[in-house]
Length: 317
Image (cartoon, rainbow, N blue to C red; front, side, top):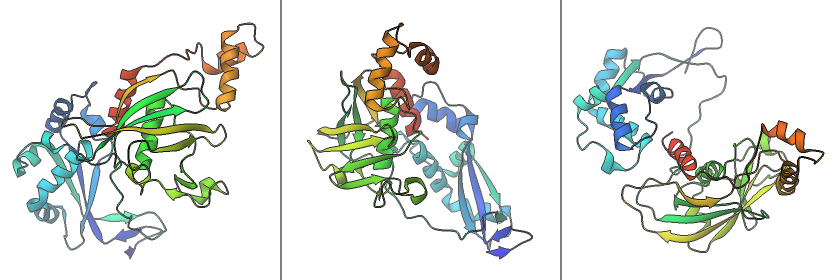
C-alpha cells in the first residue's frame, strides 16, 4: 500500500464493479417469480466489487484480464440472488455476460481508513446450501398465553446469524436490539466487547456456527433471546427433518398464530399490561398506549403472505 497525499493511501490493486442490466433483472423476476418485481435501480443499489492485480495499468488491460473468467462473474452474481443452479441459464457465454452485466474497471483505489486491511475468514453460507436437509422448526415465545408461535422451514446448515434474521422477520421484530442463542451453557451471537460489555464475555460467533451443529436432529431444543432488557425468550424445537425439495427456496413460514408484541413494551409481562390497557378504554394508561402504538392493536393478527414476502426479500439480498 503506497502513501499518498494527506490520509489517502493508494492500494496496490485495481477494482472491477459488476452491475446488472435490464435483461438480468427481467430474468430474475421471471425465474424467481418475484412479486412485486424488482426494478433495475433496486438491483444496482449495492453491487459486487472485485480486486484485480495492480500490474494491470488501465481499464482496458483489466477487461482483457477478465475475458477468460467473465462467466465466473456472472455465476457469482447469479448465486447472490439464488443458489438453485437449476434456475440459472445453462450457457453462461461471454455474449450473455455482456448482455446481462455492466462491468466497470478502475485502476486506482484509495484507502481512507487508517487501519490495516484484514482478510475475513470464510464463513458458512447464511441461508445454507441447496442439497442440505430441511428443518421444520417451531418457534414459540415463552410465557405467551395464548401462545405466539411460528412454524418455519429452513435449511439445516444455515448459520445461526441467518436464523436470527429469519426469526426476526417471521415473528415481526424490528432487529433493534441485541440477541443470543442459548444451548445449554453456551451462548451464540455477535461477539463484540463494545456492544456486550459484561453481559457475555464468552459468546460464540453466530456467523460461524450452523443450525445443525447445535441442533443435530429431530427433537433438538434450544433458546433464542432477543432484547436483553425486555428479554423475549423463544423456544425453538426441531419438529421434523425433511429431504430438500427441488425448486423450493427456504426460509419459508408455514403457519403461525398471533401478532408479535410491540418493541420496548417491557417484556412479556409488560405486554400483558399493555393488552389490558388497550382493551379497556377506562384504563388509566389506555390513551397513552393508543398514542404510543399509533392507533389500534390486534393481538390475533397474523399475515402469512406478508411474512413470506419479507423472507423472500431477505433471501435475495
